[in-house]
Amino acid sequence: MSSASAVSAGTVSAVPATRFTAGKVEKRKLLVERVAAGVLGITTSALVVPLVGILTVLVVKAWPALSWAFLTQNPQNYMTSGGIWAPLVGTFYLVFISLAVAAPIGVLAGVYMNEYAGDNWGTRIVNMAVVNLAGVPSIVHALFGVGAFVLFAGMGRSVLAAACTLAIMTLPVIITSTREALSAVPKSFREACWNMGASRWQTIRTIVLPNAISGILTGVILQVSRAAGETAPILFTGAVYYVAVPEQGIASYLPYGLWDRCMALSYHLFTISTQVTGVTEGVQYGTAVVLIGLVISVNVLSIGFRVYLRARKRW
Amino acid sequence: MNDPAAPHVAFRDLSVHYGAKQALAGVTLEIPRHSIFGIIGPANSGKTTLLKCINRTVDFIPGVRVGGQVLVDGDNVFAMRNVFALRRRIGMVFPLPVGLPLSVYDNVAYAPRMAGTARRDELDALVETCLRQAALWDEVKDRLELLGTRLSGGQQQRLTIARALSHRPEILCLDEFSIAVDPVTTMKIEDVLVELKERVTIVLVTNLVQQAHRLADHVAFFNDGRLIEAGTTRHMFSERPREQLTFDYVRGHFG
Image (cartoon, rainbow over all chains, first blue to last red):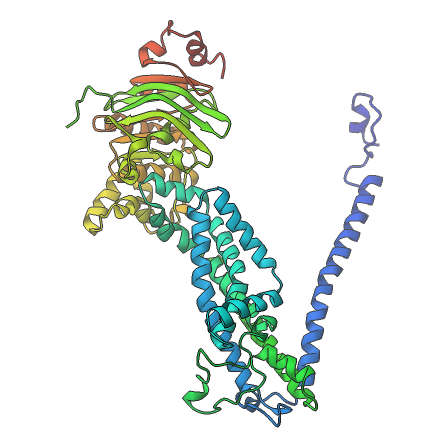
């Protein structure tokens, strides 16, 4: 229609005369685009459904049981009622001790592997070991824990043995996330430092670690939820079916010694759901709510931490 | 004191392989003291590798194999145990500017601090001198606390130069320093280089043949990992250098 297209050297053009209106091809592209966006969007929203579902059911069923006393009292009447103080403290014990063992070893090993180790057979074997360790099922970790800590190291079934087993389980992920955080620091920064005569350690201390610490800590914090949630590794190594602990005063916060066996939320949930009859529904769901609440709040904490540190990112 | 007539840096049959690829093949070359030594040649001719051998950062390249010797003041760098002391004698500027994620001040004070200088007044003076020499002082003097990574590309490049000068090197290696810098600033830095060569030996790798012509006292021409020809700037840019290849490259007939 427009004279411009007619002038275009007499070639037969597929371009419609009026510009900026969709032709056949564009219309099909638009349609496909909408369908794709729709399908992908629905799939993504569907992800939220299970989580919201789980939380809703848990909270509604647990509501009657939830109270301050539920958190601070021991289980009562052969664990059919009462609270969750003993397992709650036990879980805190296990998580903190296991991270106290795993975090330093994992972070230091990650730093070595990323910053010092060359690309040779030794490094590759260690790498393979780390990757495969991450894939070992938790029940196998439990058996290893029995052999290595309970029997061989002579720890017996104890808080310490269970925490060490959990530490072995979390170690590969801590190493991997440490390495990822370190490799996110550009290589050029290191080279600039080396060119100025800084040693590897000076470079790590002054440039690499300050810029990787956020990622490293996030990786470590995320392992809290893993250590809190696992049942199998502590099953044979230190978890106990029932033990009464002090409910009041300072003693209530430090009820277990390293060589004692302890209760833990995950194992407690397992026993009151399957091993004990006549448990109030509220107690079962209440325990689950506390466990999942613990995990979610740790995750939220770590996300918040990440956002805060990313905002201060310096390049 | 070293003999002023002896070469400051000497390469003896230096060969470097990256895996199966040969980056330098049997280079023998002497760099005289307190002069500007230009190194020219097309991409992949081994210029940067040559610089990395001088301060032994070539060690950090995975899969590298080095043969031959590099002598700094007569000492073979590959036999040295204290590479950090070696690197502190050498300033190095690479083509892509790298501002460390520290303040401008800390960027320049980094090397002296790593070498053990902690006195604030000493550092203050040093930082100012280095930033002036790199033609950056006037632009950043009021915001020394700004992060080095927030400077513009050209400013970061000059920050890199200031950093290379901060440990008072006796050899300054510049690899394409002007690639991210505007012509006016380039001229300023070139003036500084000419001034510096009274005290410092400068190795200038450049793709700008005219820059080598302007600044260098001696020029070496590399191609494909081999030293084709080295000589005085006058000789290399004359009508009759020894090699036809040199003539063609200098005149822009290839490369």
